[in-house]
Amino acid sequence: MNDAGGERSRLRRAVDALGAKARFEVADQADLVRFLIRWIALGTIVGVLAGLAGAGFLVTLQWATDTREATPWLLYLLPVAGLLIGLAYHHGAGAAAQGNNLIIDEIHEPKAWIPRRMAPLIYGGTIATHLFGGSAGREGTAIQMSGSLTDWFARLLRIRPSERRLLLIAAIAGGFGAVFGVPLAGAVFALEVQSVGRLRYDALVPALTASIVGDQVVRALGVHHTPTPVIDAVDLTPVLIGKVVLAGVAFGLCALVFIELTHGCKRLFAATVRYPPLRPFLGGLGIIALTFLVGTRDYLGLSIPLITDALAGAATVATFAFALKLLFTSVTLGSGFQGGEVTPLFVMGATLGATMGHLLGLPLPLAAAIGFVAVFAGATNTPLACTIMGLELFGVAPVVPLVIACAVAYVFSSHRSIYTSQRVDTPKHQRREADPA
Image (cartoon, rainbow, N blue to C red; front, side):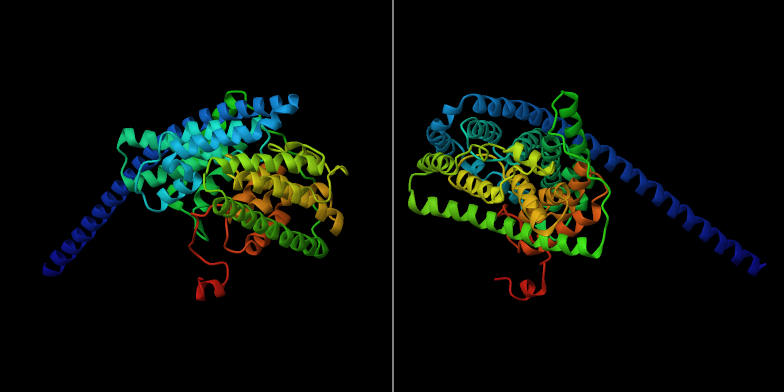
């Protein structure tokens, strides 16, 4: 009887333990469901804000580009536009002048709300830059508008600092995915860009949601992105792989030169021109001089036709087009004009890819496509996001060359970045870890 009673007692304890574990698992799954619903909802709101802002920005940017091309004399007003932009930022921007770096800093260590004036300032400054001929991009504008609007929303909801971090990551994803039409790359870029060698998986759900929703809002509003060709099947051979590696080295060094020259221009203007609003005024004069020196306006604004020609394998792409776009953009952004760096990096990458294609005997569309994403990967230390972007834009056929080129460019761009707030979480090589200086 004692044995039977003991057996029943052990069985009862086992059943109770199993029941407790089942209740725990149900409660845990319920928490996960609540987490998923909450962050999908928040990510959707961020994505709508990013999509609406991005769509309006893209439409206005197209107007500015068309107007500049139809009215060539607007270029001569670029110094005046630079002065006005400089005055607006000097007297009214405050912390908003830090741009993307402020958003990344707030993700690292939340301290203060993103200024609400960041959105109208970057929007107006970027449109003015493009309208009058500055060489700049658009991702910085989209991210800053999205970040400013998202933080305004977080302020209304009194979001906790830990959750605010996730919302700001989602804002980067929504802005990037919306303005370029690459929702998967937008999400991964936001998870990858804050720190070298680290992905923020805790923000995966809101980032992916915001990027997809932002892209869908832009498309639903009838705003179209520049089409890119699908690369045909790639005959992968050891010779091709070797050529792609060599091209990847060139792409990484191009990114490094752009980073150093842009930051160097900022330091030079700051050291030689004490009154900040005069810096873009002088930068505007420099862009006018460069335009007359090279004899073409191809390097003003976004320079999308250069990308289109390079991806089409056109023979009209100049051998040193990448270097000229690099110079125009470094002077524009280094002197204080507003805009992003990413589209100019696409231009540099695609045109350098065309040049490397001629030198190495690579198919020109393939070389331009891998350069398009690899220079960007090197300049931002985001090889995974850039590989995914390549797949979204050019199809799955060139996946191996895309991975190789992005990885090699990532390594050869060193630990520098166009975003000075980006931190090194995992060094690219052991010497950096041993000697962080």
